[in-house]
Length: 581
Ligand code: FES
Image 1 (tube, protein in one colour):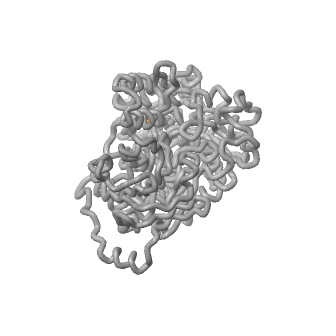
Image 2 (cartoon, protein in one colour; image 1 turned 30 degrees about the vertical axis):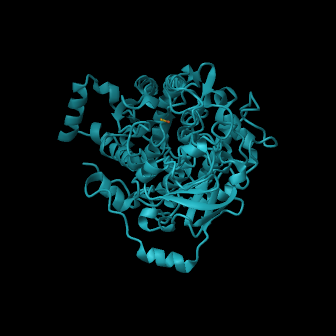
Image 3 (cartoon, protein in one colour; image 1 turned 120 degrees about the vertical axis):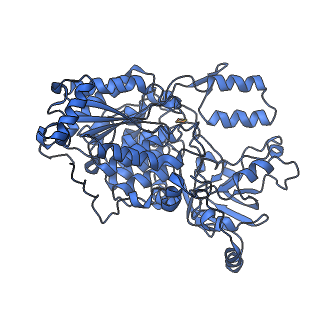
């Protein structure tokens, strides 16, 4: 598959309407560009490249973007384009409350409208910290201008007293050890100081590494881009090359709509599964697909999971970190190992196919990137569950859970809200043991709101002290990709809109059967109906502003949590751009 459109002429550029015509408005555009020190020869007849930069003083994952944006600009200049940096809201995972997920769609809207309202001919999207990747891509898809994604790259391995530390995963691990009295406060501070020691996003196979890898598999980055550590000099080279490439993409009129198909989304899902990537990818990839009119469903994840092996031996499911993955050959090598599970015929941003881009990539450490006949997990990296507790689906990441819990029936211990759980979970009087099922309600898109990463529900301190490290936990929340455990997530419909999760009570027996893909509460339909009739919705969390817009329009997890008015139905072409005056 290729892109056989005729090359554009300068008068065909969108920016021509701002810079190329002779009227009073274009006089203003040119004189104000001159005000910034540019001569007309800097931009005349050249593609204007919008660099959407999610750098912020409060986003440590993007702290190198001040430097990287200069490298992108260098590439744009070299290729004969005119680079224009456009900062956008930085969704900083460690700092933004209640969750960056509440704002993913806001960044998507901002990216789309920046491109629409300014003289952009093409876009370089700079993101990487969890939600920034799907958000920027969702906006770029909807605007459908030529766009290339520059992934932030993972940070270096963490280190504490010679122990390698992984983002997130080791936070959970050592926090549990601290609560169980196994490490000291001073140890804990050592972990704090050493776990994040360079620029870049989380270096476990968390949401960031999962989504940047998915972006590469979709064909939206240069080959190999997603695996390069942020502080590696090759990352700067990749940024400059992306700047060069976008200029040609504009002349070639190569747009996301030409690249993204149901097959490229299958490639992205397959990639995520082979990485044992974050469950968050389900929500984000569905939202991205629905922007381009591809009807990707949660069931497609389950179908593909039944045949895709986990080949990346990466934390939290495996042993290694992104730095190791890069040295072992990176994503290109992993895609080669997937063989016929990947459709190599799909077009990518460099104008070549995915198959051409990965040809010849080698594995340099076959413990990090496994062969198909020596996988980390043979299949079922993700599983979609259904039943009377989740009629529209729920998800679990079986490799991250203790195997004995894949089939488990236990007594529910229910928390109505996160605060309720925080208050009572460590109460020595709480009636709970390791066979129970911990249930958290009202943590979904409407409930929390924003569907935060609360899904790795804490194990009560008294059970931790007994050595319990995993239990079945169920919620309508998401879970950080760096988390682990027998956590059933994304229960849909969520409790706050009256889903069955809202009807679970202390003492109900809950049955989880991952091999059979079942999640049920063992109570009668009549009892469920009577509880539903008595259910009272929780009070709305927002009465004005962005929060109200969010509550009115956000979809459920199985539909990607996008706003309904931003999706592109598969039977309708994207809305044409309004005429520019
Ligand atoms: Fe930014 Fe994990 S905090 S990717």
